[in-house]
Length: 521
Image (cartoon, rainbow, N blue to C red):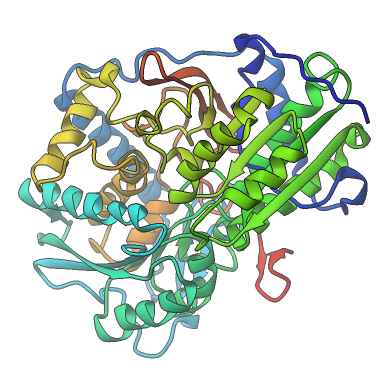
């Protein structure tokens, strides 16, 4: 197939970044049909075909008091919705119910299970695994941020509940180095020895290895993952999602390419993807293969990939191989330190000049600090997952960003020391809100009320761009976020320039995860 390399104008790129990160290793002709979520796909088409909308100022508020007042109203509305519908733990303690048919059989919980394990009259003990060492150690800064955020709420009086108790939150952190084999015994320690109230995990490979046990044990599990398996409110009702699903990202970028094959790529396009050889990468791969199988233009899209181990110390070989393919689009669907290496390699091997569209996925944007890459990131696009930037100068007067910086400073943390703080505030602000909501429900803070609070959460997230909604709806909608910002790094201005915001909230179907098949059934 012919090679075409039009250098599109900036406005033509708006939708591209739309989404970073579909991954696969086969070309279009060899792709096998998967299940394409037609509702989601139609929503993506509507967004991409519509007029791009650039979000304005992140918040209309001028003070944190205004934010706090809004959240208090939103929490009250959630409590009212739950109580007026009679949701919660049944009087006989056998069932937990929630929105849109959400239901959990509590009789399936193990003998001796306690709805208040990890709680005392004055404390809440939660556990979390994360990579504090290894090639993805920077992601471990999530934990420092989570600890700082809990310290703030503790300092403001803690977490009250309807029974009159007021508790301080205690965070137990365990380093798994992003190694699923290490995550398993660490989670065992947290639930068996430490007897924590809830467990969080970082990373898809880690999450899929432990969420079966956590659900069998009826332990709340807010997972940092966009894998399809976290969208299973029936088979895994105790595990909740965080970011946009990886499959949605794959469909978004696939749709972008298809719609611009003629106008931007001269009739055909080659897409090169570098992805991790784990569940994270596989989810992208299968999502893009499903898109190709459903596309009427699949023969016009050539898809080439290289796969890399998460623990790889260099990206030189796979990036050299992909550069030789002379693609029109390059996507980095990886995470951690590898992301910065990829940007540097592209500058050294000619891809920055030869490849019109170079895109970081949301996991990469959360890790990369482009200002430190000596100009190599100039012109790169990113799908940011909707997070605003704590270090961006244009946010200096924003009340939430000012607050977030101070939360870190109070614990001796420099907000410019890591790029992952943006994603961290996104992930952990809901924990605090769910603890507060659960405390207001009948019976006060319990595991069932905490889980129900997550499943009914519908609030204005302060760290998201306007236009990116944040909600979950019981058995119907299992993903908090189904949209993203699209940005482009300007080396001259030292800033990620916001191009547009796209959102398809409520369009992602839930998944009934089949662990044996490693897929939605």
